[in-house]
Length: 90
Image (cartoon, rainbow, N blue to C red; front, side, top):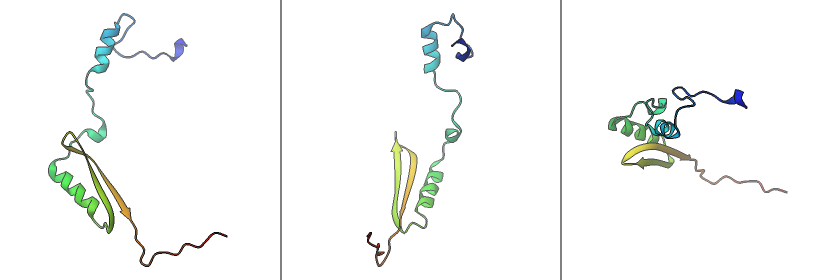
């Protein structure tokens, strides 16, 4: 079992539990790549317009959290006129 234990940099056997908890609860110093840059309002509007482009039927859903746009979802639907006939199973 001892071979599976990894040493976390900065911790030793003498590091107290409270010190480890304080370390874990610190805000991350490195941001994930997809959150590294925050788009400005003009970029958000461009992304919304891009989601609306060429959308005949469907929806664009804008997800907001803490007064900030965090996600844009696009659902595209296809309508058939006249409706397509589906062959009946035997």
